[in-house]
Amino acid sequence: MIWTILQVGLGGALGAIGRYTTGLAAARVLGNGFPFGTFAANVIGSFIMGVAYVFLMTRDEQISPLVPLIMTGFLGGYTTFSAFSLDLWSLIDQERLIAAALYFGGSIGVAFVALVGGILMARGLIG
Image 1 (cartoon, rainbow, N blue to C red):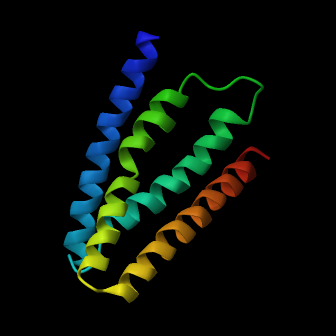
Image 2 (cartoon, rainbow, N blue to C red; image 1 turned 135 degrees about the horizontal axis):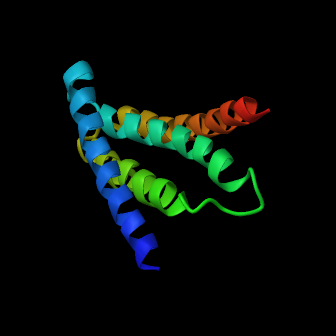
């Protein structure tokens, strides 16, 4: 049990660092006018979740012992739906309703498409 908790903690710390650097990179490349960093983290994280799901949870009858580290820890720390909610509220509060609607629909829709893409790609890699 303690090893699992340590895996989640380590993965979460690494995921949070990844999310922070993704946000910095997105702001540097795309500017601060839209929450591109949160959007990118959610899409990238959803894609990785799809790949991890295939490789860690569906290949054998046993769930991989890396699930707590990668899926719960790293991806839980990397994806940002709590930040997503705050960013969405901020756009609504600024009365940027079209941007808010695009951000809401795009974040959920594109992240889901990325998840499915990750699953399909990973399944293709393993035959």
